[in-house]
Image (cartoon, rainbow, N blue to C red):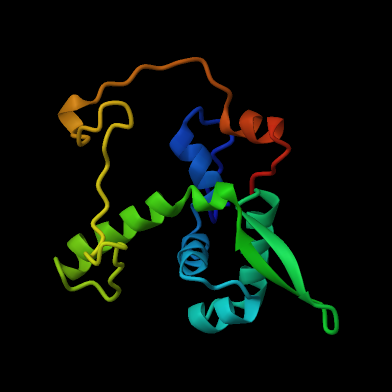
Length: 163
């Protein structure tokens, strides 16, 4: 979905994710979806994005299974856009981007939006190993390659398209 990027020949999960959500408008649409926005006109008013661009991004997110639509009016025909389970799995990504922007763009404690946990504290995302519960630090990580499809092949096998 990137503006001009074509990741179809890459064999990389980051490139695969970018092919779906790598467009800046898409990330802002998702941010607002997590904040409860569900309607086209609400996104258009909040973001100021051109209607054709918004329509294209929403269409792609539905085609990719990140959002689903539900009609809320027959006359005129209107629909809500709701996060699917696949879309909700992007919550840590959006929260991590927000935390990064708060820290490195606005400065600690100066970000424009606070997100509070149910305990009442301001949320600070933290990555931990799902197996042992220890915080993830760069020096603790290693990587190894395994055979994989290219992004184009993976999307094709799922019946999804790549722009």
